[in-house]
Length: 463
Image (cartoon, rainbow, N blue to C red; front, side, top):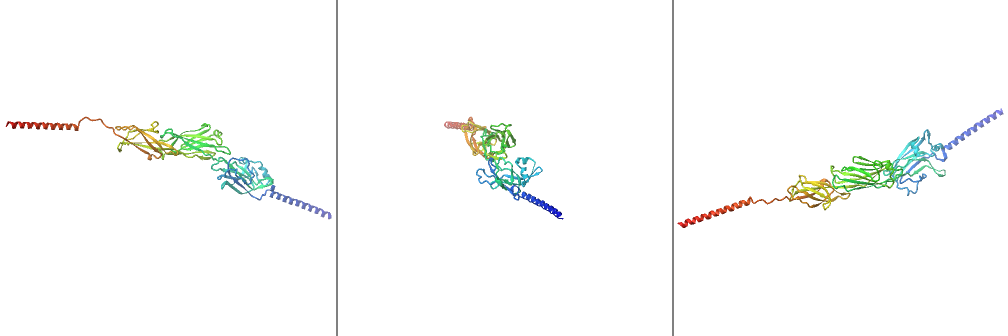
């Protein structure tokens, strides 16, 4: 009996020991789950984006707040970022509360997540503001892909996508749960310019050159697109375009789409561009003879597009005004004369003829002339009559007139009078012949009267 009791006691002791070990094992597992590698699995994290302009640096930081930002550039508002949690690689879940989760992402790059067999879940999208800040708070611990989904308006590139772990490991076995990142954008701070030439001749139908000088901006991820766009005024028509130092068809192509002219650089041409280089393009246009000149000021700007960052040139203009010559009889402005011909000169010596015109039946003729570029809105011309109307005296003097930019209806009016031609002396007829006849008649009457007196005296003497 004693032996049986002893056996039973031994069996109960063994069971108790096994049970104790099981409890200890469970307790050990629970302790490991609640404090894997001293990560506080009960916390959440955040990603704080500080957006700046400038070139990429060589140090991404450790996730802490930078106290000195003087060398980072200027804060950039308007950059949109999208945060996605990377939840699995194929069939394996990415759980950073386990050692296996950390092993799964060891050495992983953002480009692999974008291109590989990974599952992601979009958390949120936010746009930087108030000094380039965008904060994603209350994020579960895990791996996150951060993508700049929209760059600021003047940026030439987006930031490369990057990965952030929550928490982020620090030195000395520490962990950071609120991670600060400082991604950069290269921005387009260039100032392209535009110049306008004098027309090939100061009359409608002449050509005008517009020259765009476009500095090449910096682009952190390289230039993928470079183009120059010119939206022509309706009073201009496209003739040709060229880029100094580059070859059309090889380095660039020209798209003539109505009034929009686009010079697109090819991959070959883009490969020749360097930051700070000045690209000089010239677009040649013709000033229309059929479209109303409007206010006489033909303004033009151009856009330079680098990686969808568009910078506009200042506006420049070619200015035109109208001259109306009115031909009339000297001393009678209401009596106008057609058929008079004039030459118009750009110099007071009458050496540089710019136009020849002829008055219509109503005695008027109008022409539109170039008066200057940009702020120059008036110019002197000289008018000379080369053929007078039939029956009138030619006046071949040079006459100065000032033409001003403006509508055709506001044309400068120049009145030009002509004196009528005289006639040769006529023979002595008409009133002079009657006078002679009258004198002859009176003489005959006097003679007849004298004869009568003589006869009367003779008769008196005979009696």
